[in-house]
Length: 166
Image (cartoon, rainbow, N blue to C red; front, side, top):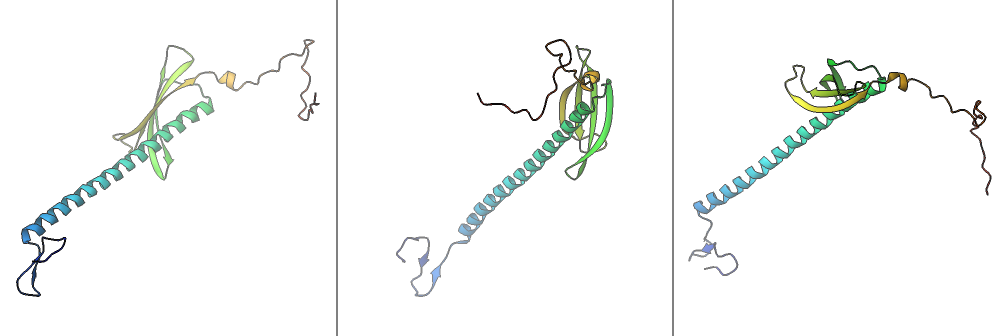
């Protein structure tokens, strides 16, 4: 018998011939390794799917936010109803549906932007709700300067005013 740490390996009485693991031990070891590889494979696949889904949701929310901000910047009077369109972002075409509805305030409109990955609007990727204010006349109007101390025009502002140290 061989002396040492590994007691599972026994040598025969004939010198030079040693017995290895039995077939049953090898099959059990391969089964354990196969289960471990399968678990790691499933974990990696799940991670890849989660990453792709999160990326899709993130870009879809960017598309919805861009639509909402575009409408705010254009300052066009909101009209209740539904509009559809498409936008390209992240080397992909995204399809959206904008639903504008009224609120209790007649100057405030609710805008729901739903983004889809397909033209048939079967796979929703993201949604964003925002509000638009119906005040284009305020947005596009210049603000008149306040009158001066004597009730007339205020003094002109010079961009190169130098302040004296106290």
